Length: 144
Image 1 (cartoon, rainbow, N blue to C red):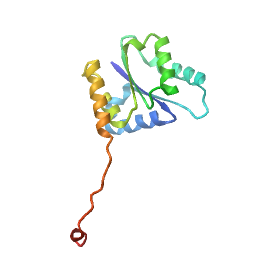
Image 2 (tube, rainbow, N blue to C red):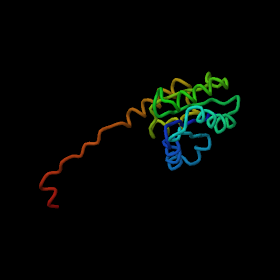
Image 3 (cartoon, one colour):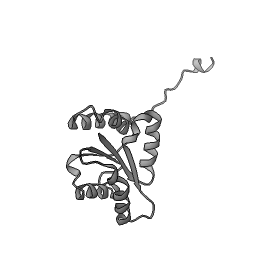
Image 4 (cartoon, rainbow, N blue to C red):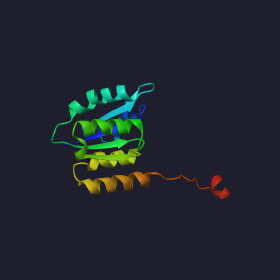
């Protein structure tokens, strides 16, 4: 089994988990979400992450961490925790999560090898970022 850990500042991770359940309700049982709360210090966050995340992970399971910002306190704190617990060597970490990346990881996590999963997730996440340009309609079409 592969667990997905969503890590963020604030409630982004929890909100993303909620949204993922709309698209893949049967697959979110393997997803854990945690966010650094407003006013929470890193030490308290680390203790809470250890309490909420570690008991759910078995020794034979692979982990995929999706985080909002590379280098942010939530990601570095969770990475340090996973390292202390001896879990980092079987963990994939991707920063800059969005819905497309998370949905791709969730649906492909058990079917692709490490490198293919990372490549596919990053490609899908990047492809989802687009500028929407509205087309101007012709005056004749407005009369219809």
